[in-house]
Amino acid sequence: MDSLRNFFGRKQILFANILITKRTFARLAEVGKLESPKLGGKYDTGQLILHRIFGYRGVILFPWLARVYDRDVPQHREETEDDINPGVGKEVRGKTHTFYQVLIDQRDCPYIRAQTEAVTFLGNQESSRSLYAIPGLDYVAHEDIIPYTSVEKNPLQHELFDKFLEYDKHRDPPFVPQETLRAWQKKNHPWLELSDVHKETTENIRVTVIPFYMGCRESHANSVYWKRWIRGILKLSMFIVNNRPVCGD
Image (cartoon, rainbow, N blue to C red; front, side):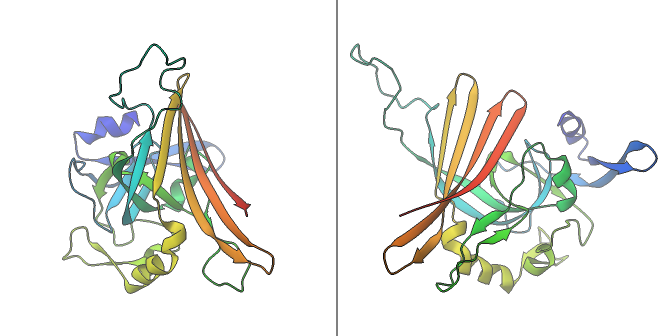
């Protein structure tokens, strides 16, 4: 990340690709030019990005508006002498925040200092019990987006990139959504939707939890609802990300 900060002023991006032959060495190659992050407004579909924390390349598919419940943000409530544990168990007001559904460049996955797992859901076929998994999808907060441009027509390697986006040199950004992306978003909206984000810091450990609805399976006796969550843990420079499915009645 230090290299990104150094090159940011020069409007250049250099990426290191690790090549393994008789000996291991790094090769730097220019992949595009950095743009200034947006302080207001939203990024458009097709915007190429770098993740501010994990450093991977990606492209924005569409935005989500989520309610963020952050216990570290003061709630403007005065503590009283009767409060044995100030701040514990108090109501946290959610604030609306923009996140983005992002495709991750598969070339960068081996270098991400986190466990990159597939987005998992049941799908909308009531007669099927299959779990669907889409690798290389992420949810990124607006402030973690570093936008950049590329002169390449295929700047990202992901199996869904060409299916969801097409190149149009007259547009900015030059990658526009195809009908397949709109249809996919509409079909899978219930289990892709990001609605709530919970954050809290305890003993210098910053925890972020994002719950998701995976779907429901009906049986003669009862209904089984499937859920999953993404859990991010930050302590100094260490990141741990989990994506776990659970089910319950």
